Image (cartoon, rainbow, N blue to C red):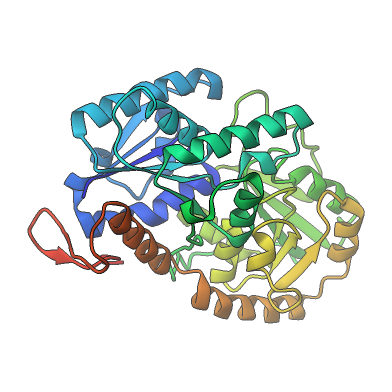
Length: 377
């Protein structure tokens, strides 16, 4: 079984997903049976994968990168002949499924990682996005929803239920125990993500602006889609790190008192799972997949999206002891529901199903060693 992963970006949550899943698939299938197409400019984010697996395409911007992505997919399908393609996010899914109209393609599994029509768009654009996704759903074998919220959105869009399977995201049960330097007696809050409208860093900045005496904030991330840097104000109690490796992000999470996720919309929210793994509470806007991950008040707190005043009131009320208790409860919830081993096993069973293998049929690595679905973590 040869699997080709296709990603239009490998930064942010999509990059974390690939770094978690592909090493386990590599262990199960062997290097000869796994490949990944991703932007050449983002390959440094896939630091857990051997270079032989990675095929970069030039992405100077999203619009200019899509023809390069399409050419890379056609070339690798022709030369490497994968048995199955797993496309990640809206634009990779659109490219791969549209190509299937004009050239022979293997079965496609598509994971939107958050529906494009969940984005607040003008009415005609939103309707076009829904129509496009509904039409393209017929060009793939399965659609992987990363949360029940994402599945329900697909059903409301008119995508057939039998084409959708829910496979919740997960991360490795253990991560780096390093702790980033952060010498501050105030409550230390951490934001991890793209600096764009979806992730809501601007809401968090507005909320924390007058709370300099009691709180400090560290922001990990940058813009992804090109253009000038997101115009966030410079405040004395807010610092910026840019993009960091997964190990460096884990060290930042270990150093904070709480992780804040002020997203305006969110298909899943992988950073919440990473925080819970480290026994850190999650303060999240009550949207999308975050409503399934965070339990208020057991493992964190909710606040309404795009509402800096409500978030400010919540931040002003934080208690360090309560945050510790919430973090410990979050760790237990993580171990029960959100490890990457479970995600990996469910994906491997899905691949076998799509390729018509009997349930539980062994997957044979190049050395001839039978590996069960799920492989080796």
